[in-house]
Image (cartoon, rainbow, N blue to C red; front, side, top):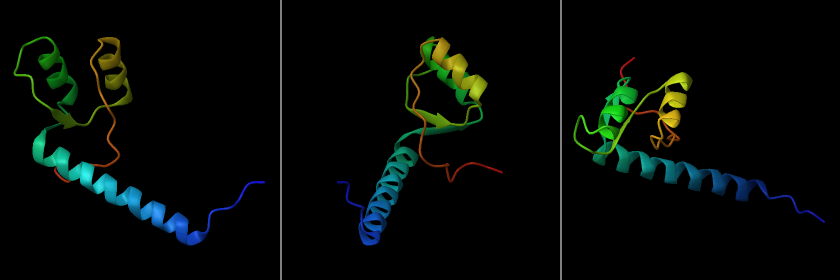
Length: 87
């Protein structure tokens, strides 16, 4: 028989997840270079030795993401939007 989680347990889990995402965001924003919509170009430059190897983050379209994967460039989607992003 499956037990349903209590509402307080669900709320606690959501708060824990949100807290962990905020911690990851802080680490990324403090230690990675934000390259915005130039992410794809910068990732390729790093892969092919055209610029210094460093941790970066930014935005990429689905098509750009597919390009990076096709070129064996490791990427990881982040569970937040950057506070550095300009609208």
